[in-house]
Length: 294
Image (cartoon, rainbow, N blue to C red):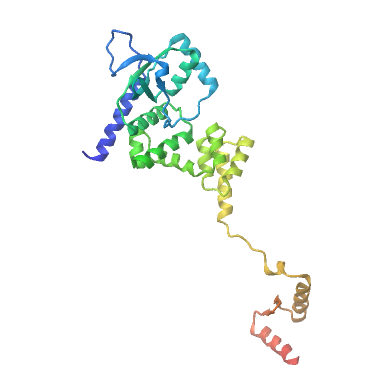
């Protein structure tokens, strides 16, 4: 089967799974459109260390825990068998964490028999579709699929339902230094702010300026453009005259006044040069006459 067709089918399959996950857990006796729907003890479930999501807001977790106490878990947690009576989360770690805070003994799960690659794809698709990942986590997830499974940017676009340019722009964020990544992960900088900083000479310093002044993305882009423009302009080096000692400069002025022409002296410990600039043959002849008189 053509690889592109396979990737498109995989993308549709993952999207369908996310749709299934959005459905309420059926009560006992009802038919379910998903396989292996059940309640299992919460201590049998563990997080997936490969989950692209790393940051969970404590206040949001406590809010979700309060909701779970009142209404239960509306969307089941997707897991896969990890060992005997042990399951690893594929999607739904936030709900699992909140369920622990809420004191639940059992949680609803959908058990999927998938490999590491598919588990990572599902985790990324679910989080991206629900905007649960911060921009850095999203980029790291894409990088993981590319590095470990040879995905192209087009492949990822097909799977997650985003354009190739979206994937490319996300991956560009990984070029930023660690202090800027920390701002991004904490939400102090948006992806738009961060993308503007990638080609600049000192992203960290500019990021601190943006955060401290609360600059908009447009203002950040202008700041970055000014920095890039400054990089592209040729560096002006100090004129040799500015690097000379006062005695040499004084001698240059004396000779220039005497001849009525620009005189440059390049003096070194082992010798040097005197240059007399003229603009016409008449000026050259005058210099020659003056030298002949000596």
